[in-house]
Image (tube, rainbow, N blue to C red; front, side, top):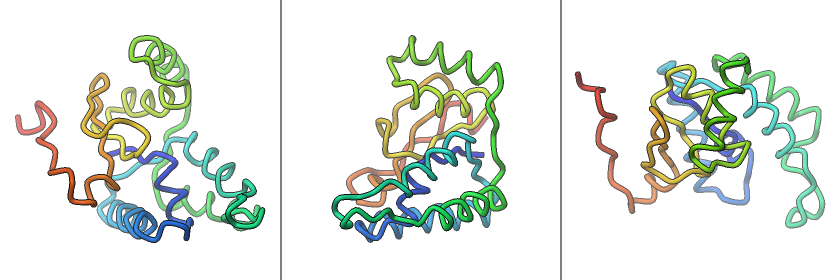
Length: 159
């Protein structure tokens, strides 16, 4: 199971960048069909905050009305398994922030993957191809642009 970061959830509803919207829709649709994706609790919380925030470039309107965002958050919970915070996730996030120099929010997202054995985080907010602990970062937007070739298997994946 691979972990989905908040940005993919937001781009799914963001008409300002149609290319990223299409990629996010495809990644989420394919991951749901193959049952290969999980969502951290944090991504759902951040999703609601991000899509309901007023946007200057949309004349002060949010990407989604609050009621729609809340329904979509619940729908996400029905579509994907949700990983919940616990002591291990929080302690791992604290250590990850210190050891890897990650921001608190990135460390927390990473900690969900590290603790729950997710080999990859799908996100544009980390460096594509970087390994952090046992987790590799995959940026589907960068990869879809043709500038990045397929990453090699994660070590031990073929053994």
